Every structure is written in C-alpha cells, then in structure tokens.
Length: 146
Image 1: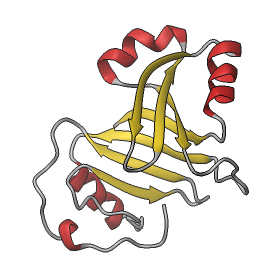
Image 2: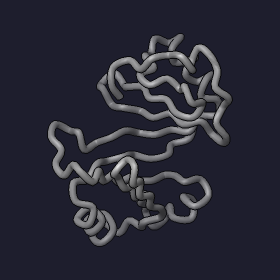
Image 3: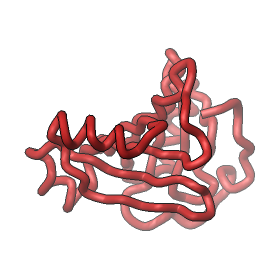
C-alpha cells in the first residue's frame, strides 16, 4: 500500500492557494479543471516532496474547488485519505472478510471507498492500469455514503 493524498474542499480557490502556497510554501504540482463536473482539483506538495510527487504523484494535498459551492458546514470540507494498492479486488476482498463495509465497490477496477470506524472516508486506487471489470464487484451496489 502507498499513501497518495488527502483531499480538502475549498470555498475560494484563490484564497486557499494564497494560504497553502503563498503563506505555507507548498508548491502546485498539478491542476485539473473538469467542465462537466464543474470542479477544479489542485494538487500541492511540500517543497521537499516536489520531485517525488512527479514520479509517484504522492504525497500530496488535493484542494477540491466545486464551482457552485462556496461554503461547507460540519466537516464537509475534509474529503478523504487516498491509498494506492497493488490489487484492488484482492484488497477489498481482504477488507470484507475482516468485516469492513465497501461503501463504493471497485466496479470499474480502479477505485473503491471505505470508511474508518470514526467515519473518515478512505479512497483505494488500483496501482497501474485498471483491473478488468469482474464479479462480484461489477454488480455490487453502493452502501451508505463515502
């Protein structure tokens, strides 16, 4: 398993970048604007992690700016922790056997979500290329929220 990133939602991207980059000294290493989803993702690295982040795309702070939402209440600004795993199907099966609920199954062979006992959302991502779609994952429904 490999730690990837922590995601936080921001209400004002310019103010957030001023804080994280201008004041704290983090460095923007990647940005994605998604017109269809109406959001922008900005990935930041500590200065000492910039070179590593180019190769591994981690460890990073992901700022998510949803274009239509500018205020978050009750901890909604914290998104999730993210980890890359060697085999998402085997890892999710191991978790299920240990009693962990797979809130968002890896139907696409790429991504799954679980929650910690304290309700922290954790994203699991397949290392490398997506796994071929396979049962029982392909037809499993979402459970709860993530």
